[in-house]
Image (cartoon, rainbow, N blue to C red):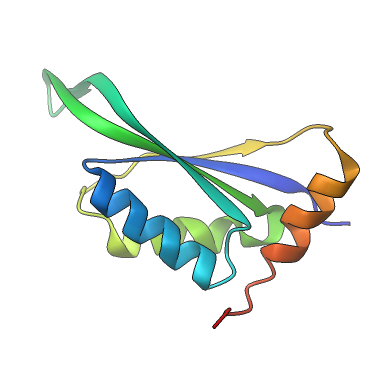
Length: 110
């Protein structure tokens, strides 16, 4: 049986995150995305400490789709190196898990 996976990523704007989330969902790569605006990131980039306002996106998908989700995020992302982390989901409500797995089948929805 396929297992659910959360894909964590960030975007520089709500607009970009919404576009990416809609595309992932329409392509059937995600059952759902959660977009959390208003995050402040402090990070080291190219030898300097930087800070920026960002938007977090959590993609709910299944194990078999995680690499396709990552490829789609990279393809459309404005960052040179977007944050992409796979977070395995352990346990949870069986009906909800089944929904994530069935809705992230990779079949386009019209």
